[in-house]
Length: 84
Image (cartoon, rainbow, N blue to C red; front, side, top):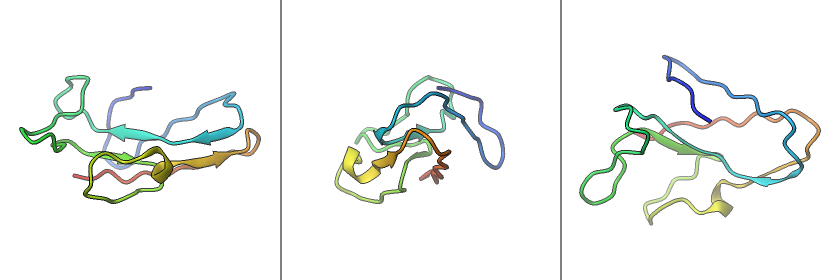
């Protein structure tokens, strides 16, 4: 899913999602390239984030760090803070 960034917060609603274990990743495509921009070392230069807001310095976030359970019934709100 994509949407244009706005000042403040951006929201998505996903309908008909079956019960399961999920994670969410997002980034702010500041240069509108369609990809997460990185520097020569592969470190992101645009804002990015994951469900559960995991913090780490040992490479990409693992699924287990960002995973959450969804029962398929009740609405669930996931808040993600972008790292800059």
